[in-house]
Image 1 (cartoon, one colour):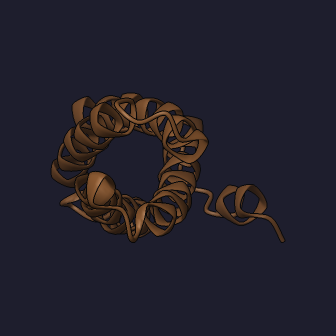
Image 2: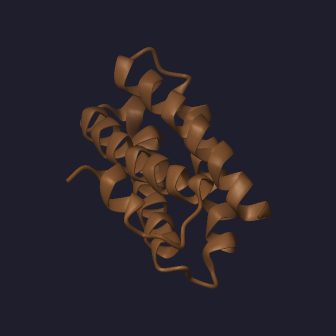
Amino acid sequence: MSLSETVSEIDRLDDEQRECIEICTEAAEVCEWCADECLGSEDMEECARLCRDVADIASLHARFMARDSQFSSQLAEACADACEACADECEQHDADHCQLCADVLRECAEHCRDMASA
C-alpha cells in the first residue's frame, strides 16, 4: 500500500492534512538523501545538519498530524521554519540533490504554514 493510500484510510483527516502528511514524509526522505550526499564535504556540513534537522521534525510533524496531536499546529510552525532555513541553504549549492531538496522543502513549508494557521 502506498503512503497516500495509507493516509487516505485515516478518515478524520481532511485533504489539506493528508497532503501535508505526504509532503512532510517526502521532505524527510529527500533531506536524508541530501544529507547523505553532503557527507564528507566541509562546504556541505551546514546543509547536512539542516537536512537532518528537517528530516526529524518533518517526520515527527507527520506523525503528530496522523494522531491528531494537540501540539500539531506548534510543530507545523517549527517545521515550516526549519524547511525554509534548509531550503535557503540548499539553494546555495549547485548539486542536483540540493536543488531538488530545496524545491520539496519550499512546498513543505507552505503546507506546514497552512496547518499552523488552521
